[in-house]
Length: 331
Ligand SMILES: [Zn+2]
Ligand SMILES: [Zn+2]
Image (tube, rainbow, N blue to C red; front, side, top):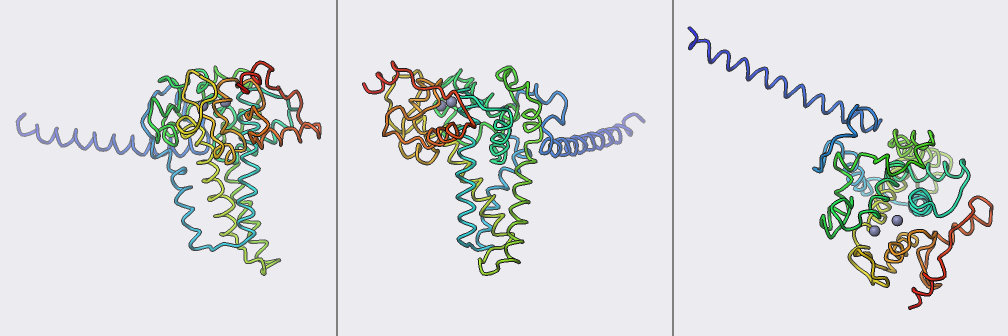
């Protein structure tokens, strides 16, 4: 009797196991979907230490790249290209001046509204909120080229340092103990928590603008789809890869003026592409100044932009390069 029942019991257990695994797969999907919208959605998620790529959670990032292929359907126009370029420039400035030099390194002062406006522009870049960005970047400086560095090409390999490290569950987490000076602002915490909201609003706004222009000025040859694909998807994808060259290429290719304890390099091409961030060996040697070009000929567009904002009274207290660093840079 018992023998007759054994296969049945086994089948029932298998069925229950399948049901449980289907249940956990659907729970995982629902959990991921909630995290796409609200990074605090799953309690205890911040404690998970997992360094494998979470492909489900990374799906919107992959989709952003695939969406660029739509340029072959929507076509192109001067307005679409101008919008893509303008959004690249404005958001690159927000990332380098504010996400990097202000939030991560505190190299100048800004009022709370100015801080918020540039945090908002940075958040539209699909590089998550200012708290997440600054916490990872501070860990990069603290642990450069060690296993605790989130994106070292020397330790983790080139591709991982460029576009792998932030797609893991550990990478998605914000290390709050690194940013006590920033968590006190509820508006910044809000931007970090709902980090997909601002990019989605920008994409929707661009589409609506394209539709409007198509109706009021059809001679421009623009459409909603064209504005969305060029202004959002292409611009954001290029902006993303330009930004992360500083984690990958700027630790591999270029010259080393200062003998720092890492592989950081100075690279003029990366400096042009990223508005000054390519003087990365300078920056690792002395991150406490608002400038990254240490000589007059080291083009640093972010520094020029910040000087303009300072002249307008929007920012202040730009930390200069100390005399001894200037002397050392001159050799
Ligand atoms: Zn670095
Ligand atoms: Zn830095």
